[in-house]
Length: 409
Ligand code: ADP
Ligand code: MG
Image 1 (cartoon, rainbow, N blue to C red):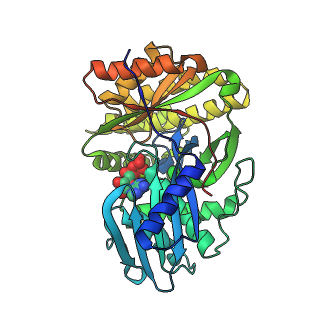
Image 2: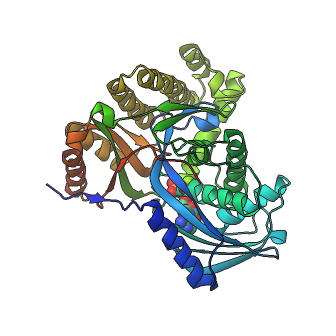
């Protein structure tokens, strides 16, 4: 059996110390404080957020840490342990879409979006360190934005982030919804990544021990209790470490296809397509009709699967979610066409080794897969997935057992 590689998770003290240390080494003083924010993994509801649909992410124990201190000018100086390019400097007065490149655009973007919304945010120094896997479909970008958002909230006394109570629940969801929207603006307009709102909502608005049911039509959330261990189960996350070219282009094409289908169907968004089969008939015909019909079928059936998944959790019938995960993967692979060889290998190997259900998660074309496994089977399923990758001459995946952690704070 191939020995699986497990990804590193830092506890809060370690993340805090690393960010403080980087800050002190870089700027020669101590930071005023450290805030952190989690990556996320989506249980079900993929490519639904930009269709006003439903999604069901959890916050991961993997977090991004931001050590910050105020400045009395409008300069932002930033450094990241994950970016060996040294210190970047940006004047907030000069910050606008298209002016800041690379990773700095996510950080400066948050300050820019806060200022655009009328908040009094000045210059700051920030040092970033993170154990959220990069580009693994686990949302390191939203973890970065959210860590900076809550750090700036504390630094400038904005009063939006509230607290996280001892049970791991945010005390001010309305304020966090505002921060999430501003983080989306940062990612869309400053970083130029046209993502939906699920990642930022998960990082800022999730609750420990719960999945976050997010309704992307109105931004409303519900915390759904999720205690897999109590049911003798575990959630295995497989980071395929696959990197495929054209991911951004494929994502933009899927969004454009959904917009075009909604236009032809005369609805504001695909969320409004409740009568799937009739809608599909209306789309077929024309050179792209069959493709659009399959895209719509994925979105409509996936939204229904989120509802069924939550119903199963509410009823305490956790194992009933497994076939929904399998159906989600099939739909993403065949109708939405966003899977790839590595994701299919991970899902198939996990199922063959006894996973109850498995699916790709995140946008696709690489990134991560998740598998629902009996707690006693975690090591065996992980080993089988690692062996399948080795057998297919794929680079070794990184594995994690995910539990629903607390939000940014
Ligand atoms: P994902 O969010 O799935 O991890 P993305 O492509 O959306 O992948 O975001 C990854 C990008 O976010 C990186 O290329 C980098 O620009 C930025 N980023 C994320 N985490 C960090 C970090 N700790 N330090 C610097 N940049 C980061
Ligand atoms: Mg991202």
